Image 1: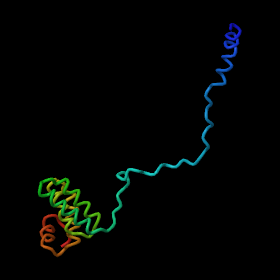
Image 2: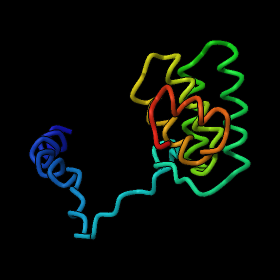
Image 3: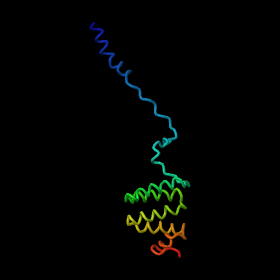
Image 4: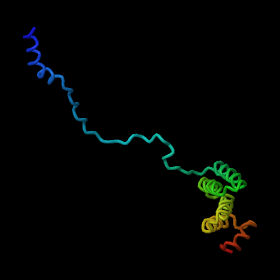
Length: 135
């Protein structure tokens, strides 16, 4: 029995060397590709002409405006102008919301665009006198 114990003690270090975990080979060099973006909220929004979406944004903006949430209304009117850049009503409402927020530069810009799109309306005449514009 003693011989067996001596044999185990002598061969144990050799046996332990064989049991070391082998490291995997290095990965092959491949072209690194980024995984596809899964979160849609990080993708930039693409605006295409969509008058229905623009009208929806104006209607929602009107609700915010009635509740005196001018920042949210401004945001919705701004969205509407991106969906339909020729929508004069959206620019008028955008100017009104900007005016309520005391942002005179944004109001002037919106009103001038409104005057450009609808020069013959009563609002355009009033705004020309107040905010300037072509006569």
